[in-house]
Image (cartoon, rainbow, N blue to C red):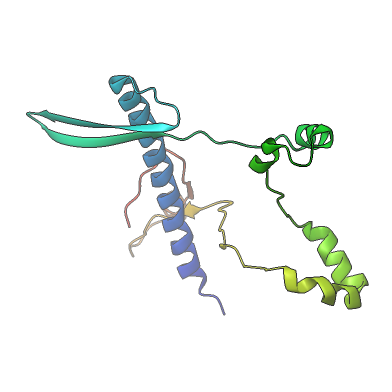
Length: 169
């Protein structure tokens, strides 16, 4: 049986952590932009190191900017047909194998004998379990005392956690 109070506390902690992560991410992105502007870094597909000292401290930074290269598959398939089989431009392209998981499940279910022929070429690895928070509420601690029902209702009202709320454990 699930300890519901424990699960609520864990969800609340996770919610606070996610808010903290989002704030930290936004701060990091802003600082990175300001560093790029301050150093006037422009070096596609390269890196540059910086050192700085001041009365407040010192730093050593390395700025890098990768360039990602992708293939326009449809374009390559059209061009490839026109090229000589020994054309040196063909060396830059690899054939990438991918799997259609929906089709794989269908073959596994409908054609088990044929599935056995291909399953050796397929590796399946479980991914990370994710936890999405739909809603989290916190009930304030209520100490034992005599009060009328109106006062108790005011003390026990639900507080929805928002992005700007900060709560300690």
